[in-house]
Amino acid sequence: MASLFEHLPELEGDEAIYIQRVLEPMNDESARSFTTIYRARRKDPITILILACVGLFGVAGIHRIFIGQPGMGLLYLFTAGLCFIGTIVDIINYNNLAFEYNQKVAREVTQLMNRYNPQE
Image (cartoon, rainbow, N blue to C red; front, side, top):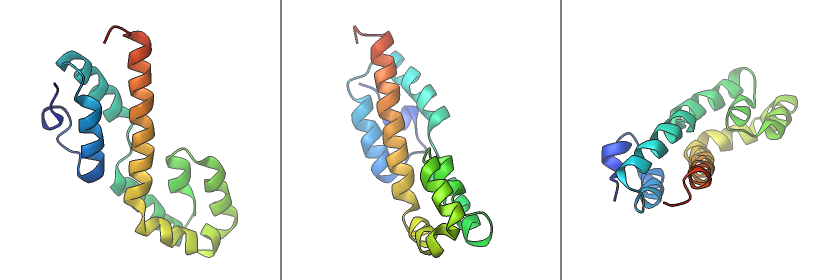
């Protein structure tokens, strides 16, 4: 059983709980592979917050494009962040945006690992 604090000590809150559940059935070698790929692909919530704040004073929607939602990003861009209301809501909910994206990344990495290491 792999330990979250050993492999990804920087995680906090819901993300830490979720990733701990993902790591539980893995041996140390699989956990090390998972964390290497996951760490490279995950998005930091603070980065999303900063990009959303840029949307208030500059180009709206950059944070949505950053988390893999180009359609919403373009909508925010052309509507000034849905008249700033959408951008303000995203600033408040930046942790949820990051957590949802990082959950998706964790599922993709797990599927990738299972595809190439089906015995584990």
